[in-house]
Image (cartoon, rainbow over all chains, first blue to last red; front, top):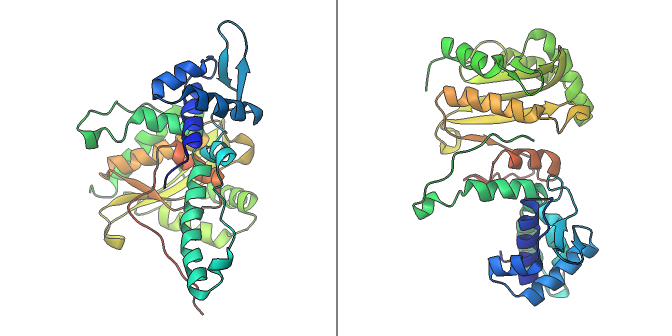
Length: 150
Length: 167
């Protein structure tokens, strides 16, 4: 599965902001950290602001900060703003037995993806980031686990 | 894996004795808890299953505690929730692993760390019994409970559940 560029940029931005919800960050700082287009990120941030997920502050020291609750906002809340993750409607080409069977299999995959995105909050994502579960595969040491509270 | 009996009592006591999070106490379930478990489960699921919970207590609250755990959370003597799990080995070809198959917290007191403390206590029981992984199975249309276990660091495991309707 691959997310569209705008979706990935949105997730980078909200996770960056969720890491310190009280902090304001300039779009340029986020763009620089992830090596992404500032122009594209600015558009994505405007979409996130319109949806009430981030809020912008103007003037000197202005930027963006998270407007939602990172323990409540899920990956699905962000992704759905930029691309559909619901089950797809049956197309005319699928109106055959083989087409319907294929649709059933694809729906199974979509339902799992949707459940996954809906169950992972920004806070949980930050825990995954901090735990660096991929580190052992790269031969790196993982940080010690800290107690988590729900 | 360690033997039943002494280990289990020690493990449960160690996991349960400490007062956790603002006066929360985790302890092994007692017979007197069963009606409270039944009532809470009915409140949350809308379905009363008294016989099921009595049988579960018979299996998990008494013997076999070395590998079976039925813990409850209470605050100032008030029942707050429960968790049930056991160690299973070699089912589906899986090495020994802790399974969590029930957890409930009073709806009014959620997001106050009760579920986390129950989960932590049960994982400690599993750890002391010698297993290194813990597993559960969840309805994918229940984001609340899915989110809870995700927040504890659980990810999709190496197994896929399949089923069919018998005609």
